[in-house]
Length: 127
Image (cartoon, rainbow, N blue to C red):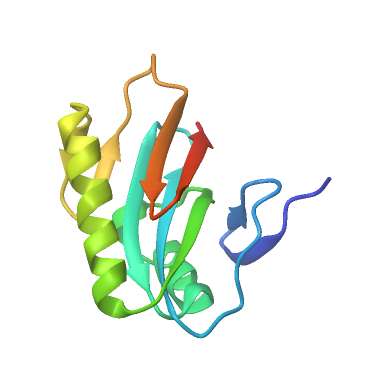
């Protein structure tokens, strides 16, 4: 199964993890993005996924590298999205993952998956 390419820049792509479905609701989302070539993930919120991923790909902070969207969680409101983002950030810090500016985390080499609980569902992300 081919990956869906969301946006492209200078040969670098931002695509979806295989099997990940992006909701088409008009709401806020919490997303986790993996920067290829490194065990680096970024957590953030947005109300426009396509625009936000385009901005990530064109942001010099992330360099010229491919990115894969690992997880997208729809939230009922901006407040709920911010609370979930804070919860995930605190969880990753508690696990001892190295926190970089702009809510990015280096994941240790021995970690191959992360589980995030939201409401009644647990999202397991393979790295």
